[in-house]
Amino acid sequence: MQELIKVTVNNDQQLVSARDLHKGLAIKTRFSLWVSQNFKDFDEEQDFTSVVSTTVVNNGARKPIQDYALTIDMAKQLCLMSRTEKGKQYRKYLIEVERKWNDPQEIVKRGYAILQNENTQLKLEKKNLTIQLEEANKKASYLDVILGAPDALAVTQIAADYGYNAKDFNELLHKVRIQHKVNGQWILYKVYMGQGYVTTKPFTFIDHKGRTRSKPSTYWTQKGRKLIYDILKDNDVLPLIERSDIE
Image (cartoon, rainbow, N blue to C red; front, side):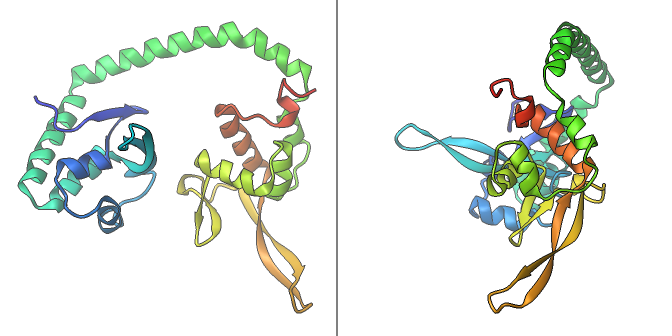
């Protein structure tokens, strides 16, 4: 079967590039407008994920551009929505890709590969366990700090633990896909909503007319601080207390 569009795999899920699909279907509408017109009936993080790809400009340099990783199901629906012969062709191709992916023999192969990878990972974890324990004994764990301070904290206070100001730390939390901005306000991605990671407290201030005003302000709970710690650690970002380059 001739490849019509590149299919990648992430977390055992097949994905295609929205830009590749837009190009393959020969959509005349510009990419950003096509996205705004057709993605509104799909759920981010479930049907598609925002990603950054690159393109080569005239001077040969690589320029970052907005792209989206689409599930096969969403890609097939977009093919239908195009109402073109290209759409039919690409949808038929994606159906065949999906059929092969779900073939029992392929499922067994993937399962075996996962087991091999897990076995290798266990060996590596065992090899590094002694080093990790030694490092844990050198400095107090940031988790001890979190567990020892059950009160919810403003992002400014957590940012200071990492050597950031609040603005840059909020951008960091956006970069690692914990939160995104909606109408000028930082909001948790849907996968983290309603799980007790944040709480709201009133923030009192004096306005320019000297009046006492109050507005709701977001604070991170102990559970939320643990989430931040785990995700940032996975991205090689550690609090100051755990950094080996700081005495």
